[in-house]
Length: 265
Image 1 (cartoon, one colour):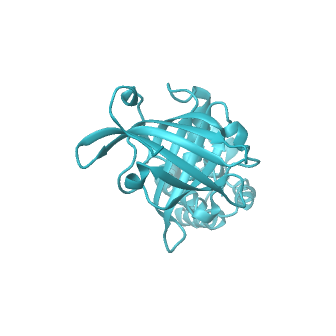
Image 2 (cartoon, helix red, strand yellow):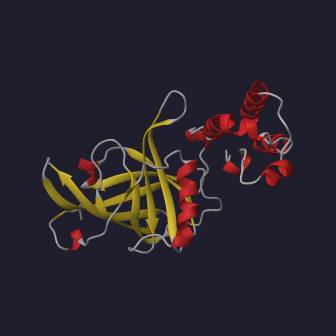
Protein backbone atom coordinates (compact mmCIF):
# COMPACT_ATOMS: atom_id res chain seq x y z
CA UNK A 1 0.00 0.00 0.00
CA UNK A 2 1.37 3.40 -0.99
CA UNK A 3 1.07 6.01 1.75
CA UNK A 4 3.28 9.01 1.01
CA UNK A 5 4.15 12.05 3.04
CA UNK A 6 1.58 14.08 1.13
CA UNK A 7 -1.04 12.30 3.26
CA UNK A 8 0.49 13.69 6.45
CA UNK A 9 0.17 17.22 7.80
CA UNK A 10 2.45 19.75 6.14
CA UNK A 11 2.93 22.49 8.71
CA UNK A 12 4.62 25.79 7.98
CA UNK A 13 4.85 28.66 10.43
CA UNK A 14 6.85 30.97 8.20
CA UNK A 15 4.23 33.70 8.41
CA UNK A 16 1.12 34.33 10.44
CA UNK A 17 -0.75 35.23 7.26
CA UNK A 18 -0.06 31.79 5.78
CA UNK A 19 -1.10 30.10 8.99
CA UNK A 20 -4.31 32.06 9.27
CA UNK A 21 -5.24 31.45 5.66
CA UNK A 22 -4.77 27.69 5.74
CA UNK A 23 -5.68 26.63 9.28
CA UNK A 24 -8.58 26.26 11.68
CA UNK A 25 -8.14 26.92 15.37
CA UNK A 26 -7.76 24.09 17.85
CA UNK A 27 -9.02 24.90 21.32
CA UNK A 28 -6.70 22.66 23.30
CA UNK A 29 -3.73 20.35 23.12
CA UNK A 30 -5.97 17.43 24.04
CA UNK A 31 -8.19 18.13 21.06
CA UNK A 32 -5.15 18.20 18.78
CA UNK A 33 -3.82 14.90 20.08
CA UNK A 34 -7.27 13.36 19.67
CA UNK A 35 -7.34 14.58 16.08
CA UNK A 36 -3.92 13.06 15.40
CA UNK A 37 -5.08 9.70 16.76
CA UNK A 38 -8.09 9.70 14.46
CA UNK A 39 -5.83 10.44 11.48
CA UNK A 40 -3.59 7.49 12.31
CA UNK A 41 -6.60 5.19 12.58
CA UNK A 42 -7.64 6.20 9.09
CA UNK A 43 -4.14 5.94 7.61
CA UNK A 44 -4.71 2.39 6.38
CA UNK A 45 -7.02 3.72 3.68
CA UNK A 46 -5.23 6.38 1.69
CA UNK A 47 -8.33 7.70 -0.04
CA UNK A 48 -10.17 8.07 3.25
CA UNK A 49 -7.11 9.64 4.82
CA UNK A 50 -6.90 12.29 2.12
CA UNK A 51 -10.58 13.17 2.46
CA UNK A 52 -10.31 13.32 6.22
CA UNK A 53 -7.08 15.30 6.31
CA UNK A 54 -8.38 17.89 3.86
CA UNK A 55 -10.85 19.08 6.51
CA UNK A 56 -8.18 19.94 9.09
CA UNK A 57 -4.92 21.84 9.60
CA UNK A 58 -3.19 23.49 12.51
CA UNK A 59 -3.31 27.26 12.85
CA UNK A 60 -2.80 28.06 16.47
CA UNK A 61 0.86 29.08 16.56
CA UNK A 62 0.67 28.93 20.33
CA UNK A 63 0.27 25.17 19.96
CA UNK A 64 2.70 24.82 17.08
CA UNK A 65 5.90 24.31 19.02
CA UNK A 66 4.28 21.76 21.33
CA UNK A 67 2.44 19.96 18.55
CA UNK A 68 5.30 19.65 16.07
CA UNK A 69 6.87 16.64 17.79
CA UNK A 70 3.49 14.88 17.99
CA UNK A 71 2.74 15.53 14.33
CA UNK A 72 6.10 14.25 13.12
CA UNK A 73 5.97 11.14 15.30
CA UNK A 74 2.40 10.26 14.37
CA UNK A 75 2.94 10.87 10.68
CA UNK A 76 5.93 8.56 10.68
CA UNK A 77 3.93 5.98 12.61
CA UNK A 78 1.05 6.23 10.15
CA UNK A 79 3.39 5.77 7.21
CA UNK A 80 5.06 2.73 8.77
CA UNK A 81 1.66 1.18 9.47
CA UNK A 82 0.50 1.84 5.91
CA UNK A 83 3.62 0.06 4.62
CA UNK A 84 2.80 -3.22 6.28
CA UNK A 85 5.89 -4.96 4.86
CA UNK A 86 3.89 -8.11 4.16
CA UNK A 87 5.67 -10.20 1.54
CA UNK A 88 2.32 -11.20 0.05
CA UNK A 89 1.48 -7.53 -0.55
CA UNK A 90 4.67 -6.59 -2.42
CA UNK A 91 3.85 -5.24 -5.86
CA UNK A 92 5.89 -6.46 -8.83
CA UNK A 93 6.30 -5.16 -12.37
CA UNK A 94 3.05 -5.13 -14.32
CA UNK A 95 2.97 -6.45 -17.90
CA UNK A 96 6.51 -7.74 -17.50
CA UNK A 97 8.35 -8.42 -20.78
CA UNK A 98 11.16 -10.93 -20.27
CA UNK A 99 12.53 -10.36 -23.78
CA UNK A 100 13.18 -6.69 -23.04
CA UNK A 101 14.55 -7.63 -19.61
CA UNK A 102 17.17 -9.92 -21.14
CA UNK A 103 20.74 -8.76 -21.64
CA UNK A 104 23.50 -7.43 -19.42
CA UNK A 105 22.82 -5.85 -16.03
CA UNK A 106 25.35 -4.37 -13.62
CA UNK A 107 24.54 -4.56 -9.92
CA UNK A 108 25.07 -1.08 -8.47
CA UNK A 109 23.29 -1.56 -5.15
CA UNK A 110 22.61 -4.58 -2.98
CA UNK A 111 20.78 -5.52 0.19
CA UNK A 112 22.63 -8.54 1.52
CA UNK A 113 21.03 -11.77 2.78
CA UNK A 114 22.22 -13.88 5.66
CA UNK A 115 25.37 -15.88 4.94
CA UNK A 116 27.87 -15.94 2.09
CA UNK A 117 27.09 -14.16 -1.14
CA UNK A 118 28.68 -12.23 -4.01
CA UNK A 119 30.34 -9.07 -2.73
CA UNK A 120 30.97 -6.73 -5.67
CA UNK A 121 31.89 -6.56 -9.37
CA UNK A 122 28.55 -8.32 -9.95
CA UNK A 123 27.45 -8.60 -13.57
CA UNK A 124 24.46 -10.67 -14.72
CA UNK A 125 23.59 -11.72 -18.25
CA UNK A 126 20.04 -12.93 -18.81
CA UNK A 127 19.15 -15.00 -21.85
CA UNK A 128 15.90 -16.25 -23.38
CA UNK A 129 16.07 -19.68 -24.99
CA UNK A 130 14.17 -20.91 -28.03
CA UNK A 131 11.66 -22.47 -25.65
CA UNK A 132 11.06 -19.09 -24.02
CA UNK A 133 12.74 -20.12 -20.77
CA UNK A 134 15.04 -17.65 -19.06
CA UNK A 135 18.54 -18.49 -17.84
CA UNK A 136 21.28 -16.31 -16.45
CA UNK A 137 25.02 -16.29 -15.99
CA UNK A 138 26.59 -14.07 -13.38
CA UNK A 139 29.98 -13.27 -11.96
CA UNK A 140 31.22 -11.42 -8.93
CA UNK A 141 33.91 -11.26 -6.31
CA UNK A 142 33.49 -13.61 -3.37
CA UNK A 143 35.60 -14.67 -0.39
CA UNK A 144 35.47 -18.37 0.43
CA UNK A 145 37.26 -20.53 3.00
CA UNK A 146 37.66 -17.44 5.19
CA UNK A 147 40.28 -15.62 3.12
CA UNK A 148 40.32 -16.97 -0.44
CA UNK A 149 39.29 -14.11 -2.72
CA UNK A 150 37.97 -15.35 -6.04
CA UNK A 151 35.73 -14.41 -8.93
CA UNK A 152 32.75 -16.76 -8.94
CA UNK A 153 31.05 -17.60 -12.22
CA UNK A 154 27.52 -18.79 -11.71
CA UNK A 155 24.62 -20.19 -13.69
CA UNK A 156 20.94 -19.87 -12.81
CA UNK A 157 17.82 -21.35 -14.32
CA UNK A 158 14.38 -19.80 -13.90
CA UNK A 159 11.07 -21.55 -13.36
CA UNK A 160 7.96 -19.65 -14.39
CA UNK A 161 5.09 -18.94 -11.98
CA UNK A 162 1.58 -17.65 -12.52
CA UNK A 163 2.89 -14.09 -12.30
CA UNK A 164 5.13 -13.17 -15.27
CA UNK A 165 7.35 -11.00 -13.03
CA UNK A 166 7.90 -13.71 -10.39
CA UNK A 167 10.30 -16.59 -10.93
CA UNK A 168 11.85 -19.40 -8.95
CA UNK A 169 15.60 -19.38 -9.51
CA UNK A 170 17.99 -22.29 -8.99
CA UNK A 171 21.76 -21.77 -8.80
CA UNK A 172 24.34 -24.10 -10.32
CA UNK A 173 28.11 -24.36 -10.49
CA UNK A 174 30.09 -22.49 -7.84
CA UNK A 175 26.74 -21.48 -6.42
CA UNK A 176 26.39 -25.01 -5.06
CA UNK A 177 28.78 -23.75 -2.39
CA UNK A 178 27.39 -20.21 -2.24
CA UNK A 179 23.67 -20.98 -2.39
CA UNK A 180 21.30 -23.90 -2.00
CA UNK A 181 17.72 -24.51 -3.03
CA UNK A 182 15.41 -22.24 -5.01
CA UNK A 183 15.27 -18.50 -4.48
CA UNK A 184 12.52 -16.16 -5.54
CA UNK A 185 13.46 -13.75 -8.31
CA UNK A 186 10.90 -10.97 -8.37
CA UNK A 187 11.18 -8.06 -10.77
CA UNK A 188 9.79 -5.16 -8.76
CA UNK A 189 10.29 -2.48 -11.39
CA UNK A 190 12.29 -1.79 -14.54
CA UNK A 191 12.29 0.50 -17.54
CA UNK A 192 14.30 -2.22 -19.37
CA UNK A 193 16.81 0.29 -20.77
CA UNK A 194 18.34 1.78 -17.62
CA UNK A 195 17.36 0.33 -14.24
CA UNK A 196 15.79 -2.72 -12.61
CA UNK A 197 14.87 -3.50 -9.00
CA UNK A 198 15.07 -7.16 -7.97
CA UNK A 199 13.81 -8.73 -4.73
CA UNK A 200 13.98 -12.14 -3.09
CA UNK A 201 12.64 -13.31 0.26
CA UNK A 202 14.17 -16.53 1.50
CA UNK A 203 12.31 -16.85 4.79
CA UNK A 204 8.88 -15.46 5.67
CA UNK A 205 8.18 -14.79 9.35
CA UNK A 206 4.99 -15.89 11.12
CA UNK A 207 3.60 -12.35 10.80
CA UNK A 208 4.04 -12.35 7.02
CA UNK A 209 7.11 -10.11 6.90
CA UNK A 210 10.48 -11.27 5.58
CA UNK A 211 13.17 -12.56 7.94
CA UNK A 212 15.88 -13.08 5.32
CA UNK A 213 15.76 -11.11 2.08
CA UNK A 214 18.14 -9.81 -0.52
CA UNK A 215 17.70 -7.32 -3.31
CA UNK A 216 19.71 -5.96 -6.22
CA UNK A 217 19.53 -2.57 -7.87
CA UNK A 218 20.64 -3.16 -11.46
CA UNK A 219 21.72 -0.70 -14.11
CA UNK A 220 22.46 -1.17 -17.78
CA UNK A 221 25.42 1.14 -17.19
CA UNK A 222 28.46 0.09 -15.09
CA UNK A 223 28.81 3.69 -13.92
CA UNK A 224 25.53 3.48 -12.01
CA UNK A 225 22.00 4.85 -12.14
CA UNK A 226 21.11 7.97 -14.05
CA UNK A 227 20.03 10.92 -11.85
CA UNK A 228 16.50 10.69 -13.23
CA UNK A 229 16.20 7.07 -12.05
CA UNK A 230 17.29 7.70 -8.46
CA UNK A 231 13.91 8.90 -7.17
CA UNK A 232 12.05 5.93 -8.66
CA UNK A 233 14.51 3.44 -7.21
CA UNK A 234 14.38 5.11 -3.79
CA UNK A 235 10.59 4.83 -3.82
CA UNK A 236 10.80 1.12 -4.64
CA UNK A 237 13.28 0.57 -1.79
CA UNK A 238 10.80 2.24 0.55
CA UNK A 239 7.93 0.07 -0.68
CA UNK A 240 10.06 -3.02 -0.02
CA UNK A 241 10.71 -1.78 3.55
CA UNK A 242 14.43 -1.86 2.76
CA UNK A 243 15.28 1.84 2.58
CA UNK A 244 18.68 2.43 4.17
CA UNK A 245 19.65 -1.26 4.00
CA UNK A 246 21.43 -1.25 0.65
CA UNK A 247 25.14 -0.89 0.06
CA UNK A 248 26.93 0.33 -3.02
CA UNK A 249 28.36 -2.33 -5.35
CA UNK A 250 31.60 -1.12 -6.96
CA UNK A 251 33.01 -2.32 -10.29
CA UNK A 252 36.80 -2.41 -10.29
CA UNK A 253 37.43 -5.01 -13.00
CA UNK A 254 38.34 -7.64 -10.41
CA UNK A 255 36.90 -10.53 -12.41
CA UNK A 256 38.93 -9.53 -15.46
CA UNK A 257 42.23 -9.86 -13.62
CA UNK A 258 41.87 -12.68 -11.11
CA UNK A 259 41.42 -16.40 -10.68
CA UNK A 260 37.92 -17.77 -10.77
CA UNK A 261 35.60 -20.42 -9.49
CA UNK A 262 34.00 -21.65 -12.71
CA UNK A 263 30.58 -23.05 -13.43
CA UNK A 264 30.47 -26.62 -14.79
CA UNK A 265 30.69 -27.00 -18.55
